[in-house]
Image (cartoon, rainbow over the protein chains, first blue to last red):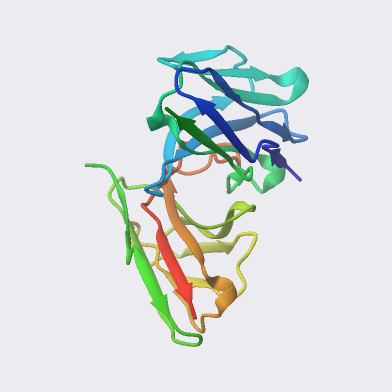
Length: 116
Length: 117
């Protein structure tokens, strides 16, 4: 079975602070895919990033960066200089063969609140 | 514009009254899926479809039905809704699996908030 753990239920920061959202996963597969989605207060799910298990390069996209470490089974997400518009629930998800291959296994999400 | 649409967006109904939530995508995706989102549980898969006339159960299929008669549409049917089906529902689509694994980015619909009284 596969599992995704987002231990941080809720994080509050002040605008311009950096914040890291943790994601730890469990899988027996050697090939798998990891995803991050953002769910703003309006409710839709917005795709942020997809990473396969063979690509351990860190990714940076503007104020967003992702740190993928297979050794610790983690795929953490950092927002630099957070803004109020970053307030949302963030989900980490995993797709792998032993999870059935046909679905995303989601973590329970981290609620990020960015205040002025 | 590439998108997944769901209707209705909001629905309040009563126990036992059959309802259908529609889902349509315009990206010619083979794979479609339904998830429900509940507080503290994240998103859990209800049913999925690999292509027309090919559907299968996900993790929480009890009380739900689906059909896939056309590639673009994947309706979710609640034959006799109960209060424990009160939830936020998402439809998703993507291209098919590769090597038995969902590798492609899932495109999600805007969600349907269902309340069963």
